[in-house]
Image 1 (tube, rainbow, N blue to C red):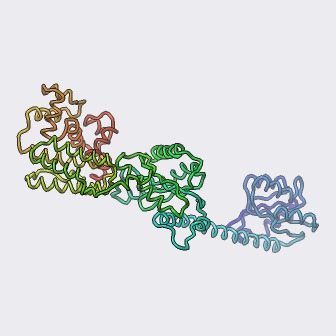
Image 2 (cartoon, rainbow, N blue to C red; image 1 turned 60 degrees about the vertical axis):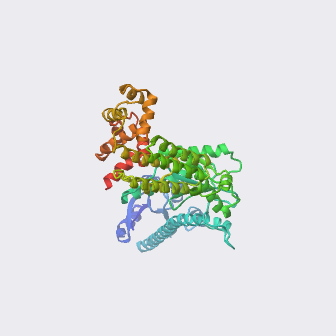
Image 3 (cartoon, rainbow, N blue to C red; image 1 turned 180 degrees about the horizontal axis):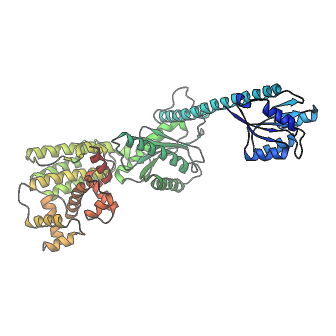
Length: 542
């Protein structure tokens, strides 16, 4: 380790002796400058601050003590050694105040100077090594304390207070921002599913989660007056904050809207948020977590991008029988299968819609229960298709296997689309075994020719010389789907070829008849379960 030193001495012969009689490089010292007076030395310090200053006390223009005082007042940090022929107590007191490291009485030999300077150099190196060790320990502690906080909070939200456990003391010991007073638990869920297929994508996802937690902390900290811890539990992003007693419901909701806005602006993420009621302390964090999870169930019924507050367990308590024993749903399922057997396709689609409306109206079944009922119905539809020898039906749509996809459906609307898609596929397969009504056939040909234009039901009805209502009803009777949904699905199928060729999303949307990329993306997601970008990424990863 090389240290820079400035020598300030007005006696030329003594100064030159210091510089020439000692091989300073041998001791790891670089002479950064020599000055014959204090003012000159101060200018050198300003221009190139040294590690060491060897200075006489008595010098023209600015004495050694004033030199040290002014240099340190200017913010320079260095160690200093005084050369003096005046062994006076007043100088010693002033030197101590200025933090002078050592002093030498003139006359002194080069050996004396080397001994003092080298000893000081070793002290500096030892101090720096100690600082490095302390910094390394602090960095290690900071990394570990973050993981420790995460682990402890994850444990607290999963289990109640254990006997003899004192969470208040833990808060103090690991310097959590929380206080032993009422808390609130919140969950952040990314709306757009991210499906990493490569290590790079997984790293990207981790970076996104890291940034999400940071932005969440920065955004919500004012609401909770700094008493906030943001952490990760598995794939869930959570926070625990001391409940803002003076904050109104509107203020909390406003802060959550701000969080949604910030994540959209900085990370291009849409999120849903659920929040528990106030709990007495971190001792009841597990109850807060369960409430936040229960509140997040509202996302299944109301859709993505919402803010869901826990409103009590009234509906949950009112929930009754298993969804598989729901008499109304059982009747509608029988009507659905009967309608398919008798080729009453409009009634079959209506039965699906009525089932979903019933589930939405009650809102008492959990997402897992609806997934179970949907999977059960798909199995019945597969059995029906097999009995009718509908071999052409594709139960796997490109990269999306609908049976496997059901557990990933985040909203009731997505489940509805899957079931409608399957019923429609059965209807189309059966229809291919018989001739379609000539008006429907003509309309399908029209869609194939003009799907990439601003085609509407009104235009199609005009081209086929029928009324709008008649064409819509006829379409649903023959194909089990209305005109507009058929058009959207046809466009989606055509878009897949362009996406597989790595065309830009906005370009593909124009090519298949959509003026807005967002409209195209939402339609594609509705009928495939994937966004166009996810579909493209999955295809390229194959």
